[in-house]
Every structure is written in structure tokens, then in C-alpha cells.
Image (cartoon, rainbow, N blue to C red):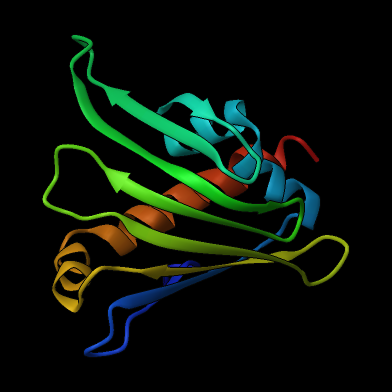
Length: 155
């Protein structure tokens, strides 16, 4: 089965564009990125901070069964417009990746469907390509599948 989340990366560009259509009303799709409890569920992480406002910040952390941190990421929210867009930075701590800039656009398709477009800009083509060598596309598709499943229950 072909993944529903599409990752588009043009050669020699330091960006990727991710698109996904959801069987969710726009308001519920946006809520999945705004509500810390919902974010924690579909991302499978602890939401330590999520300040949904211009100049706000966020921090997520995942631990193993022993409580050891295996993933921590943070950033600054530069723009936040309900049901429209979020502009933020993304920095994965303790990794070779540099900070990236993310533009998330939310679009109403019908009363019951919506679309997310993520435009991510990396410091260099090399950093972008390094991320794409990982199971990134598979991981974001799995996360979006969980988002759809979890938010369906809120309908």
C-alpha cells in the first residue's frame, strides 16, 4: 500500500515538502498540532512545553522504559494562526542535524477533509539528504496514520 503522506525532495535543494490529506475537518487537524495531549499521543512522546503563540517555544522528549532520554527536540514558534499555519524551528538535541525551519500550512478541502503541507528548509543539501537516508518518510507516514486514527475518535 502506498503511503498517504508524500515526501517530495528535489535534487540539489535544501528543502523537502510533505503533504497529507486527512479525513478530518480542518479544525480537528489543526487541534492535533495545537493540543499537547493529542500531540503526545500521535507522536508517541512527552510534550514538555507547547506555547502556541508568536514567539512561543516547544519541547518534546521520549524516554525508554528505564527513563533514559532517547529523543529530545525543541524550537521556537515564530508564527501561529489558528486553523491556518504554524511557522517554527525544529532542533533535535544530541544529533548531527542543525536547526531547520518548518512552515506548516493547514487547508480545508471539504467540511470533512483537510490537507497539511509542511515545507521544511535545511541549512544545506547535505543535511537534508542525511535525514532522507534515515527512515524519515516511513516514520512521518506512521505518525500521520496515528494522528488520523487518534483524532477520528474526537469526531
